[in-house]
Length: 522
Image (cartoon, rainbow, N blue to C red; front, side, top):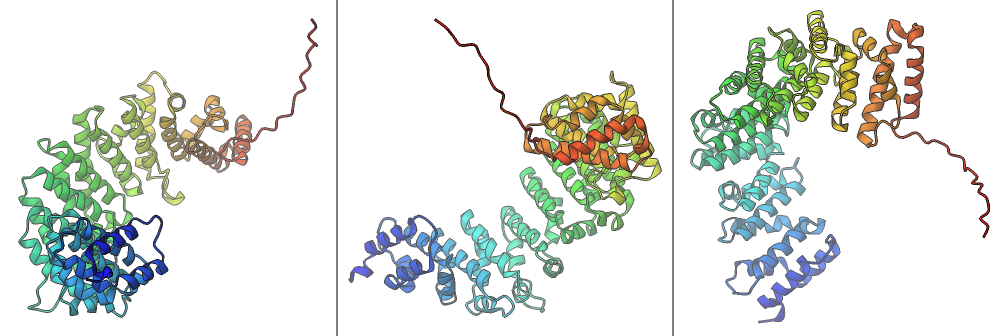
Protein backbone atom coordinates (compact mmCIF):
# COMPACT_ATOMS: atom_id res chain seq x y z
CA UNK A 1 0.00 0.00 0.00
CA UNK A 2 1.47 3.36 -1.04
CA UNK A 3 1.74 6.09 1.63
CA UNK A 4 -0.92 8.25 -0.02
CA UNK A 5 -3.29 5.25 -0.07
CA UNK A 6 -2.73 4.50 3.59
CA UNK A 7 -6.04 5.14 5.44
CA UNK A 8 -4.19 6.50 8.48
CA UNK A 9 -2.31 8.94 6.24
CA UNK A 10 -5.58 10.06 4.58
CA UNK A 11 -7.25 10.52 7.98
CA UNK A 12 -4.35 12.61 9.30
CA UNK A 13 -4.13 14.79 6.18
CA UNK A 14 -7.89 15.31 6.03
CA UNK A 15 -8.01 16.17 9.73
CA UNK A 16 -5.22 18.74 9.36
CA UNK A 17 -6.94 20.29 6.34
CA UNK A 18 -10.38 20.39 8.02
CA UNK A 19 -9.02 22.01 11.18
CA UNK A 20 -6.88 24.63 9.42
CA UNK A 21 -8.01 28.08 10.68
CA UNK A 22 -9.55 30.62 8.34
CA UNK A 23 -11.35 30.22 5.02
CA UNK A 24 -10.08 27.70 2.47
CA UNK A 25 -8.68 29.21 -0.73
CA UNK A 26 -9.01 27.67 -4.19
CA UNK A 27 -5.24 27.19 -4.27
CA UNK A 28 -5.27 25.29 -0.97
CA UNK A 29 -8.18 23.10 -2.12
CA UNK A 30 -6.41 22.27 -5.41
CA UNK A 31 -3.13 21.52 -3.64
CA UNK A 32 -4.83 19.07 -1.29
CA UNK A 33 -6.79 17.34 -4.06
CA UNK A 34 -3.63 17.00 -6.15
CA UNK A 35 -2.24 14.86 -3.32
CA UNK A 36 -5.51 13.18 -2.35
CA UNK A 37 -7.83 13.06 -5.41
CA UNK A 38 -11.59 12.92 -5.00
CA UNK A 39 -11.90 9.23 -6.06
CA UNK A 40 -9.42 8.31 -3.34
CA UNK A 41 -11.33 10.26 -0.69
CA UNK A 42 -14.66 8.76 -1.76
CA UNK A 43 -13.12 5.31 -1.69
CA UNK A 44 -11.93 5.97 1.85
CA UNK A 45 -15.53 6.77 2.83
CA UNK A 46 -16.73 3.50 1.27
CA UNK A 47 -13.97 1.42 2.85
CA UNK A 48 -14.35 -0.59 6.03
CA UNK A 49 -10.93 0.27 7.45
CA UNK A 50 -11.17 0.73 11.21
CA UNK A 51 -9.17 3.93 11.36
CA UNK A 52 -10.29 6.25 14.17
CA UNK A 53 -11.66 9.54 12.83
CA UNK A 54 -11.22 8.63 9.16
CA UNK A 55 -14.82 9.18 8.08
CA UNK A 56 -15.41 12.33 10.15
CA UNK A 57 -12.14 13.91 8.96
CA UNK A 58 -12.76 13.16 5.27
CA UNK A 59 -16.36 14.43 5.47
CA UNK A 60 -15.30 17.69 7.17
CA UNK A 61 -12.48 18.11 4.67
CA UNK A 62 -14.76 17.63 1.64
CA UNK A 63 -17.43 19.96 3.06
CA UNK A 64 -14.84 22.73 3.24
CA UNK A 65 -13.53 21.99 -0.25
CA UNK A 66 -16.99 22.02 -1.87
CA UNK A 67 -17.58 25.51 -0.46
CA UNK A 68 -14.71 26.89 -2.55
CA UNK A 69 -15.09 27.91 -6.20
CA UNK A 70 -12.60 25.25 -7.23
CA UNK A 71 -14.40 22.56 -5.25
CA UNK A 72 -17.78 23.63 -6.65
CA UNK A 73 -16.43 23.28 -10.18
CA UNK A 74 -15.71 19.60 -9.46
CA UNK A 75 -19.23 18.80 -8.20
CA UNK A 76 -20.65 17.67 -11.59
CA UNK A 77 -18.23 14.75 -11.64
CA UNK A 78 -19.16 13.90 -8.05
CA UNK A 79 -22.83 13.14 -8.72
CA UNK A 80 -22.30 9.37 -9.30
CA UNK A 81 -20.56 9.24 -5.91
CA UNK A 82 -23.39 11.30 -4.38
CA UNK A 83 -25.88 8.65 -5.52
CA UNK A 84 -24.04 6.05 -3.45
CA UNK A 85 -23.54 8.47 -0.58
CA UNK A 86 -27.27 9.24 -0.28
CA UNK A 87 -28.03 5.62 0.58
CA UNK A 88 -24.88 4.98 2.66
CA UNK A 89 -25.18 3.45 6.13
CA UNK A 90 -23.35 6.35 7.72
CA UNK A 91 -25.34 9.52 8.49
CA UNK A 92 -22.15 11.58 8.04
CA UNK A 93 -21.78 10.34 4.47
CA UNK A 94 -25.50 10.87 3.72
CA UNK A 95 -25.25 14.42 5.00
CA UNK A 96 -22.16 15.08 2.86
CA UNK A 97 -23.98 13.73 -0.23
CA UNK A 98 -27.00 15.97 0.45
CA UNK A 99 -24.76 19.00 0.90
CA UNK A 100 -22.87 18.19 -2.29
CA UNK A 101 -26.17 18.13 -4.21
CA UNK A 102 -27.23 21.37 -2.50
CA UNK A 103 -24.00 23.17 -3.48
CA UNK A 104 -24.13 21.72 -6.99
CA UNK A 105 -27.65 23.05 -7.59
CA UNK A 106 -26.74 26.37 -6.02
CA UNK A 107 -23.76 26.86 -8.30
CA UNK A 108 -25.14 25.37 -11.52
CA UNK A 109 -26.67 27.45 -14.29
CA UNK A 110 -30.37 27.40 -13.46
CA UNK A 111 -31.46 28.74 -16.84
CA UNK A 112 -29.76 25.88 -18.69
CA UNK A 113 -30.93 23.33 -16.13
CA UNK A 114 -27.53 21.64 -16.01
CA UNK A 115 -27.86 20.78 -12.34
CA UNK A 116 -31.41 19.51 -12.68
CA UNK A 117 -30.41 17.39 -15.69
CA UNK A 118 -27.58 15.81 -13.69
CA UNK A 119 -29.96 15.05 -10.81
CA UNK A 120 -32.41 13.36 -13.18
CA UNK A 121 -29.72 11.55 -15.17
CA UNK A 122 -28.13 10.07 -12.07
CA UNK A 123 -31.49 9.18 -10.49
CA UNK A 124 -30.85 11.20 -7.33
CA UNK A 125 -34.31 12.68 -6.73
CA UNK A 126 -35.87 9.67 -4.97
CA UNK A 127 -32.88 9.31 -2.66
CA UNK A 128 -32.81 13.02 -1.80
CA UNK A 129 -36.50 13.01 -0.94
CA UNK A 130 -36.08 9.83 1.11
CA UNK A 131 -33.44 11.68 3.13
CA UNK A 132 -36.15 14.14 4.21
CA UNK A 133 -37.40 11.34 6.45
CA UNK A 134 -33.91 10.56 7.79
CA UNK A 135 -33.65 9.89 11.50
CA UNK A 136 -30.64 12.22 11.69
CA UNK A 137 -31.87 15.83 11.75
CA UNK A 138 -28.66 17.07 10.13
CA UNK A 139 -29.22 14.81 7.12
CA UNK A 140 -32.86 15.89 6.85
CA UNK A 141 -31.88 19.57 7.02
CA UNK A 142 -29.27 19.16 4.28
CA UNK A 143 -31.83 17.31 2.11
CA UNK A 144 -34.35 20.10 2.74
CA UNK A 145 -31.92 22.71 1.43
CA UNK A 146 -31.19 20.58 -1.63
CA UNK A 147 -34.93 20.34 -2.42
CA UNK A 148 -35.35 24.11 -1.99
CA UNK A 149 -32.48 24.76 -4.41
CA UNK A 150 -33.99 22.31 -6.87
CA UNK A 151 -37.28 24.25 -6.79
CA UNK A 152 -35.58 27.53 -7.73
CA UNK A 153 -35.53 26.59 -11.42
CA UNK A 154 -38.40 25.85 -13.79
CA UNK A 155 -37.02 22.43 -14.67
CA UNK A 156 -36.47 21.64 -11.04
CA UNK A 157 -40.10 22.45 -10.30
CA UNK A 158 -41.19 20.11 -13.08
CA UNK A 159 -39.06 17.38 -11.55
CA UNK A 160 -40.47 17.90 -8.05
CA UNK A 161 -44.08 18.46 -9.14
CA UNK A 162 -44.61 16.55 -12.41
CA UNK A 163 -47.76 17.56 -14.26
CA UNK A 164 -47.94 14.64 -16.67
CA UNK A 165 -50.41 11.91 -15.85
CA UNK A 166 -48.82 8.75 -14.55
CA UNK A 167 -45.66 10.43 -13.26
CA UNK A 168 -44.97 9.87 -9.57
CA UNK A 169 -44.74 12.86 -7.25
CA UNK A 170 -42.19 11.44 -4.79
CA UNK A 171 -42.60 14.33 -2.34
CA UNK A 172 -46.35 13.78 -2.00
CA UNK A 173 -45.92 10.01 -1.87
CA UNK A 174 -43.51 10.34 1.05
CA UNK A 175 -45.85 12.74 2.86
CA UNK A 176 -48.72 10.26 2.57
CA UNK A 177 -46.73 7.36 4.01
CA UNK A 178 -44.59 8.86 6.75
CA UNK A 179 -44.81 10.02 10.35
CA UNK A 180 -46.45 13.26 11.44
CA UNK A 181 -43.01 14.76 12.07
CA UNK A 182 -41.89 14.14 8.48
CA UNK A 183 -45.20 15.49 7.11
CA UNK A 184 -44.61 18.68 9.09
CA UNK A 185 -41.10 18.83 7.59
CA UNK A 186 -42.48 18.47 4.07
CA UNK A 187 -45.16 21.08 4.69
CA UNK A 188 -42.41 23.36 6.00
CA UNK A 189 -40.65 22.97 2.65
CA UNK A 190 -43.92 23.85 0.90
CA UNK A 191 -44.19 26.99 3.04
CA UNK A 192 -40.62 27.98 2.10
CA UNK A 193 -41.28 27.36 -1.61
CA UNK A 194 -44.26 29.71 -1.54
CA UNK A 195 -41.93 32.62 -0.82
CA UNK A 196 -39.61 31.96 -3.81
CA UNK A 197 -41.90 33.14 -6.61
CA UNK A 198 -45.49 33.10 -7.79
CA UNK A 199 -44.53 30.36 -10.27
CA UNK A 200 -43.22 28.19 -7.46
CA UNK A 201 -46.27 28.92 -5.30
CA UNK A 202 -48.59 27.93 -8.18
CA UNK A 203 -46.73 24.64 -8.71
CA UNK A 204 -46.98 23.73 -5.03
CA UNK A 205 -50.64 24.72 -4.87
CA UNK A 206 -51.61 22.75 -7.98
CA UNK A 207 -49.79 19.66 -6.73
CA UNK A 208 -52.43 19.12 -4.03
CA UNK A 209 -49.68 18.68 -1.45
CA UNK A 210 -51.18 21.36 0.76
CA UNK A 211 -54.45 19.46 1.15
CA UNK A 212 -52.60 17.61 3.88
CA UNK A 213 -52.45 20.85 5.81
CA UNK A 214 -56.18 20.75 6.43
CA UNK A 215 -56.22 17.01 7.08
CA UNK A 216 -53.43 17.33 9.65
CA UNK A 217 -55.04 20.35 11.31
CA UNK A 218 -58.41 18.60 11.52
CA UNK A 219 -57.27 15.17 12.62
CA UNK A 220 -54.40 15.74 15.02
CA UNK A 221 -54.97 15.43 18.75
CA UNK A 222 -51.31 16.08 19.52
CA UNK A 223 -50.85 19.64 20.81
CA UNK A 224 -47.19 19.77 19.75
CA UNK A 225 -48.11 18.71 16.20
CA UNK A 226 -50.88 21.32 16.11
CA UNK A 227 -48.48 23.97 17.36
CA UNK A 228 -46.02 23.02 14.61
CA UNK A 229 -48.78 23.35 12.02
CA UNK A 230 -49.75 26.77 13.33
CA UNK A 231 -46.09 27.77 13.15
CA UNK A 232 -46.11 26.83 9.47
CA UNK A 233 -49.31 28.81 8.92
CA UNK A 234 -47.49 31.78 10.47
CA UNK A 235 -44.71 31.34 7.89
CA UNK A 236 -47.28 31.14 5.09
CA UNK A 237 -48.86 34.38 6.28
CA UNK A 238 -45.51 36.18 5.95
CA UNK A 239 -45.58 36.18 2.13
CA UNK A 240 -48.21 37.56 -0.28
CA UNK A 241 -48.47 34.21 -2.09
CA UNK A 242 -48.82 32.31 1.17
CA UNK A 243 -51.40 34.76 2.52
CA UNK A 244 -53.41 34.40 -0.67
CA UNK A 245 -53.46 30.63 -0.24
CA UNK A 246 -54.55 30.84 3.40
CA UNK A 247 -57.40 33.19 2.57
CA UNK A 248 -58.81 30.78 -0.02
CA UNK A 249 -58.99 28.07 2.64
CA UNK A 250 -61.30 29.91 5.06
CA UNK A 251 -58.37 30.09 7.47
CA UNK A 252 -59.58 33.21 9.30
CA UNK A 253 -62.83 31.52 10.29
CA UNK A 254 -60.97 28.46 11.59
CA UNK A 255 -58.46 30.56 13.55
CA UNK A 256 -61.19 32.75 15.05
CA UNK A 257 -62.83 29.60 16.40
CA UNK A 258 -59.51 28.55 17.97
CA UNK A 259 -58.99 31.95 19.60
CA UNK A 260 -62.47 32.07 21.14
CA UNK A 261 -62.35 28.49 22.44
CA UNK A 262 -61.42 28.73 26.13
CA UNK A 263 -60.77 24.97 26.30
CA UNK A 264 -57.91 25.27 23.80
CA UNK A 265 -54.42 25.62 25.28
CA UNK A 266 -53.28 29.25 25.60
CA UNK A 267 -50.19 28.57 23.45
CA UNK A 268 -52.41 27.52 20.55
CA UNK A 269 -54.73 30.51 21.02
CA UNK A 270 -51.74 32.85 21.12
CA UNK A 271 -50.26 31.44 17.93
CA UNK A 272 -53.66 31.66 16.21
CA UNK A 273 -53.88 35.33 17.17
CA UNK A 274 -50.41 35.99 15.76
CA UNK A 275 -51.31 34.36 12.43
CA UNK A 276 -54.51 36.40 12.16
CA UNK A 277 -52.65 39.58 13.04
CA UNK A 278 -50.00 38.92 10.40
CA UNK A 279 -52.69 38.33 7.77
CA UNK A 280 -54.78 41.35 8.76
CA UNK A 281 -51.76 43.66 8.72
CA UNK A 282 -51.74 43.37 4.90
CA UNK A 283 -53.77 45.93 2.93
CA UNK A 284 -54.54 43.41 0.20
CA UNK A 285 -56.33 41.08 2.60
CA UNK A 286 -59.30 43.38 3.16
CA UNK A 287 -60.28 43.30 -0.49
CA UNK A 288 -59.88 39.52 -0.67
CA UNK A 289 -61.97 38.37 2.30
CA UNK A 290 -65.45 38.89 3.64
CA UNK A 291 -65.50 41.69 6.22
CA UNK A 292 -67.51 39.39 8.48
CA UNK A 293 -64.52 37.02 8.76
CA UNK A 294 -62.32 39.93 9.86
CA UNK A 295 -64.92 41.04 12.40
CA UNK A 296 -65.12 37.49 13.76
CA UNK A 297 -61.35 37.48 14.38
CA UNK A 298 -61.48 40.87 16.10
CA UNK A 299 -64.43 39.76 18.22
CA UNK A 300 -62.59 36.56 19.19
CA UNK A 301 -59.54 38.56 20.38
CA UNK A 302 -61.90 40.97 22.17
CA UNK A 303 -63.54 38.07 24.06
CA UNK A 304 -60.12 36.68 24.88
CA UNK A 305 -58.95 39.97 26.41
CA UNK A 306 -62.23 40.34 28.28
CA UNK A 307 -61.59 37.02 29.99
CA UNK A 308 -57.90 37.71 30.66
CA UNK A 309 -58.66 41.06 32.37
CA UNK A 310 -55.11 42.27 31.70
CA UNK A 311 -53.41 39.57 33.70
CA UNK A 312 -49.64 39.82 33.42
CA UNK A 313 -49.47 36.93 30.96
CA UNK A 314 -47.82 36.22 27.66
CA UNK A 315 -51.21 35.55 26.06
CA UNK A 316 -52.48 38.99 27.07
CA UNK A 317 -49.40 40.67 25.60
CA UNK A 318 -49.78 38.73 22.36
CA UNK A 319 -53.48 39.70 22.16
CA UNK A 320 -52.62 43.40 22.55
CA UNK A 321 -49.75 43.15 20.07
CA UNK A 322 -52.09 41.43 17.62
CA UNK A 323 -54.58 44.30 17.85
CA UNK A 324 -51.71 46.69 17.17
CA UNK A 325 -50.71 44.74 14.07
CA UNK A 326 -54.28 44.75 12.80
CA UNK A 327 -54.38 48.50 13.43
CA UNK A 328 -51.33 49.08 11.24
CA UNK A 329 -53.60 49.31 8.20
CA UNK A 330 -56.41 51.85 7.98
CA UNK A 331 -59.21 49.31 7.44
CA UNK A 332 -58.07 47.29 10.44
CA UNK A 333 -57.84 50.35 12.70
CA UNK A 334 -61.33 51.48 11.69
CA UNK A 335 -62.81 48.06 12.47
CA UNK A 336 -61.10 48.03 15.88
CA UNK A 337 -62.61 51.43 16.70
CA UNK A 338 -66.02 51.03 15.08
CA UNK A 339 -66.96 47.65 16.55
CA UNK A 340 -69.60 47.60 19.27
CA UNK A 341 -68.19 47.88 21.85
CA UNK A 342 -64.92 49.12 20.32
CA UNK A 343 -62.21 46.48 20.66
CA UNK A 344 -59.63 49.29 20.83
CA UNK A 345 -60.87 50.02 24.37
CA UNK A 346 -58.66 47.16 25.61
CA UNK A 347 -55.60 48.78 24.08
CA UNK A 348 -56.36 52.17 25.65
CA UNK A 349 -57.12 50.63 29.05
CA UNK A 350 -53.84 48.70 28.95
CA UNK A 351 -51.86 51.80 27.96
CA UNK A 352 -53.26 54.15 30.59
CA UNK A 353 -54.40 52.07 33.56
CA UNK A 354 -50.99 50.73 34.68
CA UNK A 355 -51.92 47.04 34.70
CA UNK A 356 -48.28 45.97 34.71
CA UNK A 357 -45.15 47.10 32.89
CA UNK A 358 -45.27 44.61 29.99
CA UNK A 359 -49.02 44.98 29.51
CA UNK A 360 -48.73 48.77 29.55
CA UNK A 361 -45.92 48.73 27.01
CA UNK A 362 -47.84 46.36 24.72
CA UNK A 363 -50.96 48.53 24.99
CA UNK A 364 -49.08 51.77 24.33
CA UNK A 365 -47.29 50.40 21.28
CA UNK A 366 -50.57 48.95 19.98
CA UNK A 367 -52.35 52.29 20.44
CA UNK A 368 -49.51 54.01 18.56
CA UNK A 369 -50.00 51.55 15.67
CA UNK A 370 -53.77 52.13 15.61
CA UNK A 371 -53.22 55.89 15.66
CA UNK A 372 -51.21 55.56 12.44
CA UNK A 373 -47.61 56.13 13.46
CA UNK A 374 -46.45 53.56 10.87
CA UNK A 375 -48.98 54.48 8.16
CA UNK A 376 -48.42 56.89 5.28
CA UNK A 377 -49.70 60.44 5.58
CA UNK A 378 -52.63 59.73 3.27
CA UNK A 379 -53.92 56.87 5.44
CA UNK A 380 -52.94 58.21 8.84
CA UNK A 381 -56.36 59.69 9.71
CA UNK A 382 -59.36 57.38 9.88
CA UNK A 383 -63.01 57.90 8.99
CA UNK A 384 -65.06 60.31 11.12
CA UNK A 385 -66.67 57.58 13.24
CA UNK A 386 -63.33 55.96 14.06
CA UNK A 387 -61.64 59.29 14.81
CA UNK A 388 -64.50 60.32 17.09
CA UNK A 389 -64.32 56.99 18.92
CA UNK A 390 -60.52 57.25 19.34
CA UNK A 391 -60.84 60.74 20.84
CA UNK A 392 -63.70 59.78 23.16
CA UNK A 393 -61.94 56.66 24.42
CA UNK A 394 -58.77 58.58 25.30
CA UNK A 395 -60.60 61.45 27.00
CA UNK A 396 -62.79 58.99 28.91
CA UNK A 397 -59.69 57.10 30.08
CA UNK A 398 -58.18 60.38 31.27
CA UNK A 399 -61.33 61.48 33.08
CA UNK A 400 -61.62 58.11 34.83
CA UNK A 401 -58.03 58.38 36.07
CA UNK A 402 -56.41 60.70 38.55
CA UNK A 403 -54.75 62.57 35.66
CA UNK A 404 -58.00 64.12 34.36
CA UNK A 405 -56.57 65.02 30.91
CA UNK A 406 -54.70 63.28 28.06
CA UNK A 407 -51.79 65.71 28.45
CA UNK A 408 -51.33 64.65 32.07
CA UNK A 409 -51.53 61.01 31.03
CA UNK A 410 -48.79 61.51 28.42
CA UNK A 411 -46.64 63.37 30.91
CA UNK A 412 -47.12 60.65 33.52
CA UNK A 413 -46.02 57.99 31.05
CA UNK A 414 -42.98 60.01 29.95
CA UNK A 415 -41.73 59.96 33.54
CA UNK A 416 -41.55 56.18 33.58
CA UNK A 417 -38.67 53.89 32.63
CA UNK A 418 -36.89 54.20 29.23
CA UNK A 419 -38.64 51.22 27.57
CA UNK A 420 -42.06 52.72 28.34
CA UNK A 421 -40.95 56.13 27.05
CA UNK A 422 -40.09 54.64 23.65
CA UNK A 423 -43.70 53.52 23.32
CA UNK A 424 -44.94 56.95 24.46
CA UNK A 425 -42.81 58.75 21.86
CA UNK A 426 -44.41 56.56 19.18
CA UNK A 427 -47.87 57.19 20.62
CA UNK A 428 -47.49 60.98 20.65
CA UNK A 429 -45.99 60.94 17.14
CA UNK A 430 -49.03 59.02 15.88
CA UNK A 431 -51.74 60.94 17.73
CA UNK A 432 -50.37 64.46 17.38
CA UNK A 433 -51.71 64.82 13.83
CA UNK A 434 -55.14 65.26 15.43
CA UNK A 435 -55.79 68.90 16.45
CA UNK A 436 -57.14 67.88 19.86
CA UNK A 437 -53.99 65.90 20.68
CA UNK A 438 -51.72 68.61 19.26
CA UNK A 439 -53.32 71.09 21.63
CA UNK A 440 -52.97 68.69 24.59
CA UNK A 441 -49.27 68.15 23.88
CA UNK A 442 -48.29 71.74 23.07
CA UNK A 443 -50.18 73.21 26.03
CA UNK A 444 -48.30 70.99 28.46
CA UNK A 445 -44.98 72.77 28.97
CA UNK A 446 -43.44 69.80 30.78
CA UNK A 447 -43.97 67.55 27.74
CA UNK A 448 -42.39 70.05 25.34
CA UNK A 449 -39.44 70.65 27.65
CA UNK A 450 -38.86 66.93 27.99
CA UNK A 451 -39.05 65.94 24.32
CA UNK A 452 -36.91 68.90 23.20
CA UNK A 453 -34.23 68.27 25.81
CA UNK A 454 -31.33 66.45 24.07
CA UNK A 455 -30.26 65.04 27.45
CA UNK A 456 -33.60 63.41 28.29
CA UNK A 457 -32.40 60.11 26.78
CA UNK A 458 -29.05 58.37 27.08
CA UNK A 459 -29.47 55.46 24.66
CA UNK A 460 -29.20 55.66 20.87
CA UNK A 461 -32.72 54.26 20.39
CA UNK A 462 -34.17 56.62 22.98
CA UNK A 463 -32.53 59.65 21.34
CA UNK A 464 -33.85 58.67 17.92
CA UNK A 465 -37.42 58.10 19.14
CA UNK A 466 -37.38 61.40 21.06
CA UNK A 467 -36.16 63.28 17.98
CA UNK A 468 -38.77 61.61 15.74
CA UNK A 469 -41.42 62.69 18.23
CA UNK A 470 -40.18 66.31 17.99
CA UNK A 471 -40.34 66.15 14.20
CA UNK A 472 -43.92 64.82 14.29
CA UNK A 473 -45.08 67.52 16.73
CA UNK A 474 -43.40 70.26 14.71
CA UNK A 475 -44.86 69.04 11.40
CA UNK A 476 -48.34 68.92 12.86
CA UNK A 477 -47.94 72.35 14.45
CA UNK A 478 -46.73 73.92 11.21
CA UNK A 479 -49.68 72.39 9.32
CA UNK A 480 -52.28 73.49 11.88
CA UNK A 481 -54.13 76.68 12.68
CA UNK A 482 -51.99 77.01 15.82
CA UNK A 483 -48.82 77.91 13.91
CA UNK A 484 -49.62 81.63 14.09
CA UNK A 485 -50.86 81.44 17.69
CA UNK A 486 -48.62 83.55 19.91
CA UNK A 487 -49.21 81.14 22.79
CA UNK A 488 -47.35 78.43 20.86
CA UNK A 489 -44.52 80.53 19.40
CA UNK A 490 -42.09 79.46 22.11
CA UNK A 491 -43.09 75.85 21.61
CA UNK A 492 -42.37 76.08 17.87
CA UNK A 493 -38.98 77.67 18.57
CA UNK A 494 -37.97 74.91 20.99
CA UNK A 495 -39.06 72.20 18.56
CA UNK A 496 -37.11 73.69 15.66
CA UNK A 497 -33.96 74.04 17.77
CA UNK A 498 -34.30 70.41 18.91
CA UNK A 499 -34.81 69.19 15.34
CA UNK A 500 -31.80 71.10 14.00
CA UNK A 501 -29.63 69.71 16.81
CA UNK A 502 -30.31 66.18 15.58
CA UNK A 503 -31.25 63.10 17.57
CA UNK A 504 -28.00 62.66 19.49
CA UNK A 505 -26.47 64.59 22.35
CA UNK A 506 -25.72 68.16 21.32
CA UNK A 507 -22.07 69.11 21.48
CA UNK A 508 -21.81 71.84 24.04
CA UNK A 509 -18.70 73.97 23.67
CA UNK A 510 -16.90 74.27 26.96
CA UNK A 511 -14.24 76.87 27.59
CA UNK A 512 -11.34 76.11 29.85
CA UNK A 513 -11.80 77.78 33.21
CA UNK A 514 -8.70 79.18 34.90
CA UNK A 515 -8.24 77.93 38.43
CA UNK A 516 -6.89 80.54 40.84
CA UNK A 517 -5.92 79.47 44.32
CA UNK A 518 -3.87 81.04 47.03
CA UNK A 519 -0.39 79.72 47.53
CA UNK A 520 -0.05 77.45 50.49
CA UNK A 521 2.48 78.66 52.98
CA UNK A 522 4.16 76.77 55.73
